Amino acid sequence: MVEIPLARLWQLADGTECLLLKDSAAENWRVRVVRGSETLRTEAFGSPIVAMDEAKQWRLAFDRVVEAL
Image 1 (cartoon, rainbow, N blue to C red):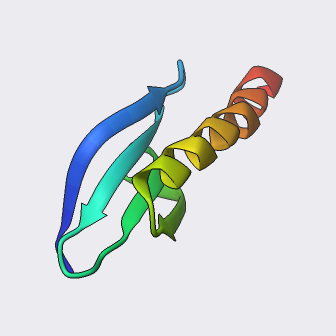
Image 2: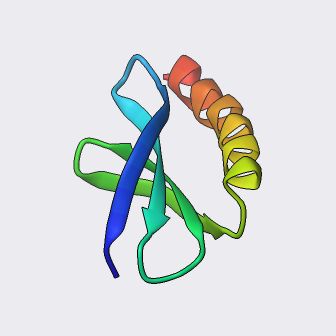
């Protein structure tokens, strides 16, 4: 499986970022949240629109965690 990074959807002050990736071997899109070399969350979607909408919700959740720190 080769993932092609397409876009950074968002980034937080602590370095947490959300990436949109395309799986070249399958017809799906991945959203991955990383901080440095650590993957915090990843999920596959059948549509890039659905993936980006979900990433917006994830930002709210991860932003609250950063604010609490």
